[in-house]
Amino acid sequence: VQLQASGGGLVQSGGSLRLSCAASGFTFDDHAVGWFRQAPGKEREGVSCMSISGGSTYYADSVKGRFTISRDNAKSTVYLQMNSLKPEDTAVYYCAAGTYYTRCVRGLDFGSWGQGTQVTVSS
Figure 1: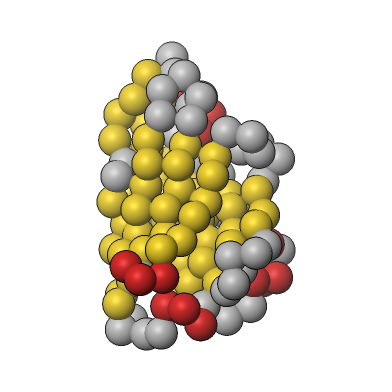
Figure 2 (figure 1 turned 90 degrees about the horizontal axis):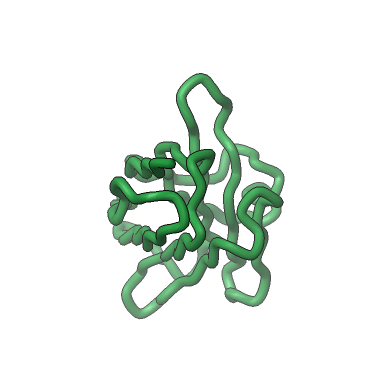
């Protein structure tokens, strides 16, 4: 199982980034997907989740209205479009895939994880 996240970088406050996470080694279509983040000195935070069908999505209150999760099953890829970025969004962002969407929503251990990608938002 591999999850390869990319798309992080340095952006000014108010800017946008699009994270991608390419999956391989498992049946992507059969898994819910999610994005988590961890800032220095802080606990891991669930950012967004999408169900297997794509019909259900979850967003943390801190990103609601600014971030959008999507998935392309044909490409086995999940995306996180991040707009109106704020300095407090600075963190390492991780993608994950798991069987149970609700575990993602609850911020619990959630299947397989990829390596993180750094997002830094300057003020």
